[in-house]
Length: 83
View 1 (cartoon, rainbow, N blue to C red):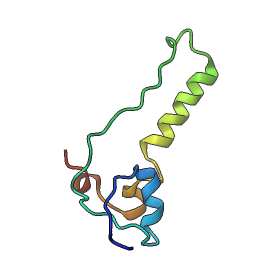
View 2 (view 1 turned 180 degrees about the vertical axis):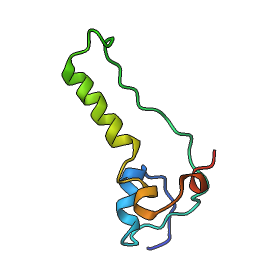
View 3 (view 1 turned 60 degrees about the vertical axis):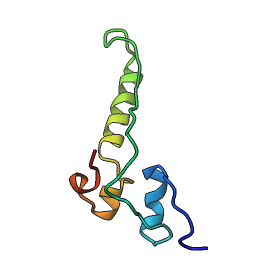
């Protein structure tokens, strides 16, 4: 059944299958519109330290995600992510 379908997977799901060739990326110069992740908190003065720590954790992990195709496959963002 190999090669019988195309699908859009989230990058964090798909990239684990690229390295062992279970999935093959196609149409790498096209992508769906990107969304955003919003972390809504109280103002900085009213925000507990643990909430600020969680926000910093999200920023550090999602800014340069080790599961991204760029990181795993060595792709360059400017070549792959055209808008």
